Length: 405
Image (tube, rainbow, N blue to C red; front, top):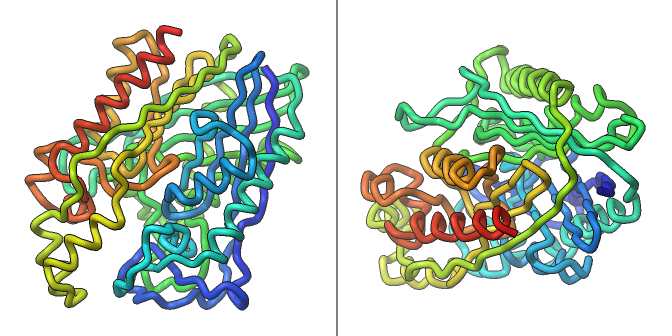
């Protein structure tokens, strides 16, 4: 196994690219007032025999296909070789500005900016290329453990995925190169009134791990099955304090797990399944809320949703020894994340780990019951009640592909 890491600043110059601050409709398309902390693309490049892949974490709300496509073109990677994820910070430039399908105007939602896509794709591709240039012999170690009382189901349901999964990457002499942390929680500690660019708590986790592990180390945070999950971030009297304290708690747990991680045999397998989605149509509650809030007639909402949603979406799987990252093209709920882990165990894959917001965005990914029950997540689920089951069929097929080869 060979591995390399890189980290590139992807904070746009807000005086030159007229971005909007995303994450909350209540920000009403306003530009950021400054940069609280920079945002980055962090890349882990891997090579084993003839197999190669790149895992990339970007401090953004989501990853539209147009960004993934541009990075693939710039790096020469095949689609199954790129695992491009968003940390889901709600205080980054509006990622809809990267989505070439978003060419219509809605209050509180960004519209496509070609110059923003070009800038971001170039910086992300730069991180990938630098990571591949830094390849060196490496060893891998993995650990996973539940962290109770650090995330919660924001709909009050008694189901949540509390597991933190970590990957330690070292040189053959035991010097840290990189770290990977997967944990499910919405980075929404900063409220909509915070009008500066920030990576929220994932940024704190990554920076503190990089400092603790040593110079040159790059730590990637990937979000798990976060669709209905909030952080339990009650410590601190201000949002800034709560972000720092919660991020620090996660970083301490991650560092403990990284130090206890067990070495695993070298292996690298990638696979991607293109899932055909049910026909795009707005949820009935979306008609009511969007029509009332945005003053958009029902006939136009139907047209807009069809334009925004793709006909197919990728389920991406990357296997590193015993660790299998399962990339969802949106925000899966806790139930679907736990089902993914169980599928993996049934196939002998001990560390099957759901990862949200990978390579594409189709909104929230729900069970039929969750879709019919309603709530905010259902209104941002645009392919009907069976979309989640279609994605889970893709998850099963992708897991089987890397379990049997």
